[in-house]
Image 1 (cartoon, helix red, strand yellow):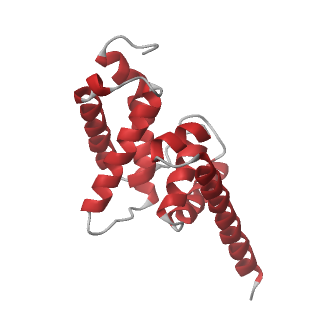
Image 2 (cartoon, helix red, strand yellow):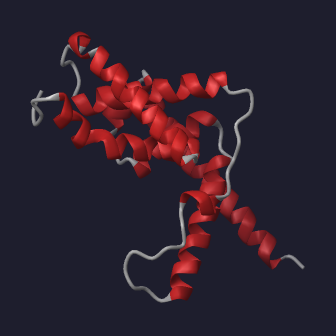
Length: 174
């Protein structure tokens, strides 16, 4: 238990990261906050059972992933929300407004393409590319073999490439 001593330290170190992961999965800010709170409640209640076989970060991601899956299974419908509710057009630093709009449009296209992938592909892609977890951490979180993580990530990227190549082909058809 490396760089934290109290539960408050653990929470302050990892809350934002866990929240961002859950926001990527749910696309709903309030729901992601609720699931992040549930994740930390479960972690705090189960802290005595943490054996230290993995990093605390990986353990928290595993809890967050299972919390998301449990919520997802309970939901009868998975609602997609407008991208504007999640990623506002508010600028944090000065940029050319046209560039900001173009960047947001590209981001919306990418998120829509990711949403079109099957669940396993979405999960592994978000954990690797957005959360920047290692293959070993992803395998541990999902309970998969390392080869399955790599295969699913490769297939997810191939499907994204195919999606965007179809989109490019559609642009030039009249």
